[in-house]
Length: 282
Image (cartoon, rainbow, N blue to C red; front, side, top):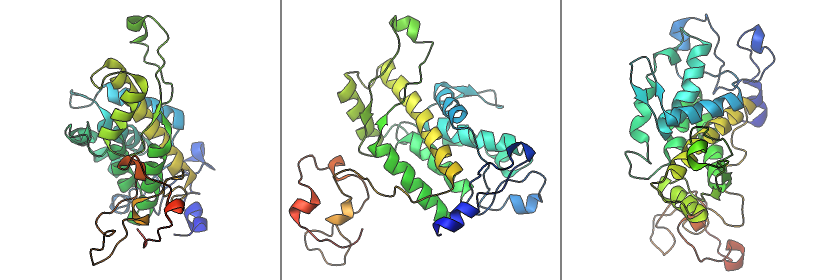
């Protein structure tokens, strides 16, 4: 989808209260009162959300929120998915989002059942994007989200007031650059940068703030209506396909795929420009 057309599909208001606000969907905006048979079809649609409020909802969700089932649900994947979907359900109580049990994403916490693979905060946010957008646009927005996550210094300073008295000081946390979308790498890099262990309350607080940041960035991207702007890491590294290019014959380069920062796996490599390698497209 061209940039102009992506911008255009956002310019629909939910109600007079949000008239003129940008809304982002794969192809449509949520319109309360439209025929349920149409609004229940994928993509479900989107309306502009407040970035800061969304960040706080993500943070709170990591700590734990009691839903209509009377159970307290929490952790990273639930936090990001619930923060976005619950707001869209509130925007249109009779729409398809109101029927989605956001606790369904709890299995993805800790990098999927604690296996520390794909970051749960990203997992929940990407699942929400998949409902909101067409498949084509979802790929653009998720690519931007993953790139931002792996190349940004996180988390932002969102204080947990419950822990300040325990620590007896202003509760500020160090930041780190994940350089990966994997929970294992992200947490390890933060622990190395901060000096806090992975089982510490500080690390848990870091992930709560990170969940809030992921929600906020997701909403920011969707509100803008332009996906595919970041796409690949933008630092002095490259992506896997520059060297590990696709092909049918094994010749030393064609044995892996990916778009992550090279330094996620390779700690001692020169820049691609220095190697002069001209691989195929990723």
